[in-house]
Image 1: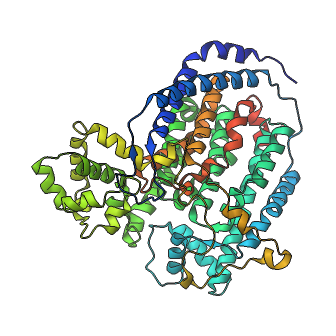
Image 2 (image 1 turned 180 degrees about the vertical axis):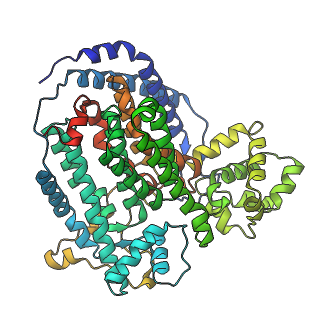
Image 3 (image 1 turned 60 degrees about the vertical axis):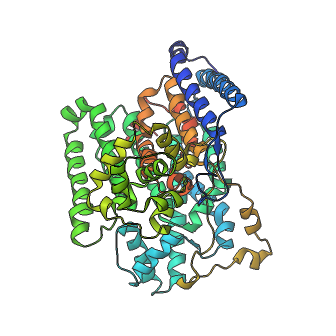
Length: 543
């Protein structure tokens, strides 16, 4: 039933500035996307990957983008203002189980095509650590290696068997999280049409089964981050009442701990999200939710102690400053390659790499050419004194700002580009290294003569920039529909995206931001989420 919402009417009057800002930002991103020259080779030099001089058509397209974006936002705002959620019975746990089975069955052809599952290069390194062939480190999270070790124990040391069990865990966990998300939407006021469309999306969009049957830590991390984000939404939908609920606290910190231990930037995501929630609801936390505050402090302190002094004492922390400073290194290389630097700076940077090699091995889209391919790259000045490297990087900024901006935009290009992606590790199939003792068998083709691999090879890459745009669209839709109070629900995935923009070593890979994809239904259904009875629904008072 369509009916004008009075809150939306008021929001229409107050939404001009947000729509202008969002439309202008979108136009600017489209403009930057248009003037980006991207080669096919990720290792191309700065003569092939750069920002070209804009022309009249670029400016006209930016203006057109602004106008179209503003009109679309106004249309969406009006559309949501006329939707009135009818009271519908929420999906039961039994229905959720049925959805889980549907997803498993719809994805099964992909698993049978690449049975027992795919292995990424990083996962194979974890396999070797689990097999005792390499020293255990936390460069790839110890928890993920521990899961692989458990799979080896179950399979009695067989790499082929371990791959099957690891894939099964990831497959079942992914289907479980996505079926839970559907039930979650239903219990927060989304009707049958919205939940049905979500199930169809999860069942037939090929990236979900492909990420379910290809083993890399990013799938498990993404699903845990989705669950953590839903826990944050629960707190917001209940107007912070869930901060006083034990079940909610267990869910929040349980998923938060998994986020912390499945990716090394996870602790920053959980820490900053918790701080933001405490600040936003400080009165409730101080007066009525002290157990949440105590639990938050104890949990995060324990995680930091384990991942810091604990892992260091065990010799597990091997990540270096060079790994974390990929973008400043790229920007510095761009300045050396394109501009003039002082004699003092020249002397310093020559300690790391000869000036000729800085110029020769600078590739705007990936920092690995400098770290791995350049001869005699000396990381010690950066490792021993990272503050000094950052100080010199900062002193380059004022005089070389245009070069530094271009280098940054190229180093993060596919994550914001709305027109094209390099498509690196967008999705993968197969086994990276043959010497691990795992081979894929196309059971589907053997049983039915149907070869799904041909279809998979033709799937175009999913642009990371469009996924980010969908997230930001979800945020602005909440603002425009008068529900900006729950926009903080996106805090965990926004922080996760920011960490990518601060430290990515490569300009394109969907796996780093795959968590954006399962959340897509939420972006467009969140304006319809019900707030007033959220606490009763979450605690089971309303069925």
